[in-house]
Length: 300
Image (cartoon, rainbow, N blue to C red; front, top):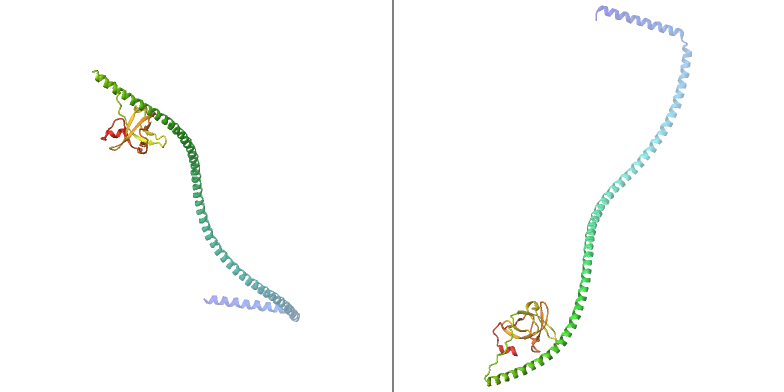
């Protein structure tokens, strides 16, 4: 700092000290120090009293606040205990919820399985119902067919009885005819002998040619009719009185004579009464002998 500056600072300091001294003097002249002191003492006492009262009030408030704090701490501890219990309950609830979800998932999976099984059972039930309806319809159809078959069997039984009667009568007529034929043959033989003795030749009419018809035995009727059903009929040229030879392989079985004609089959009577017990379904039949068998057996 320069000298001038130092001088200037000293002057300012001196001026400040002078102003302060002047103010002190003026204050001392204008102030009652004793009254001010007493007033200050009273003010101090009042201030001490107020301070004491305020301190007591503060202590009471502090005690009250301490009590409130203690109560709040107790409430806090209680709340913390409650919160701990609540948290534990929450954890248990969450655990139960998880278990419930697991059970629910299991139940839902079981429900889905039951639903699928139920749908499968419904489909099976529908199929069984349809099958039952079909079975009932089939049973009804079978009953109707059985009734028709029973009626047909009854009709065939009656027809068999009628045919048996007709066969019996036909056998009687055939026996008489054979006797007549025998007599006629005997008489014819005698006439031929007489004609030959007289030196005359008589030309006998030849029998019409027998058509070649081959077939099989379809079935053999029961006694007493003992009819043999052949698988050839009117469409094949079969006529009543046509004689068929029955053979099995290369073995001769016997002869049958046609008595009834139908469109595609015919009924023939065995020549001998025991032939019906020999003829079997599937045997071959022919109007002309097509196998090498003794011809003498044909008359047996």
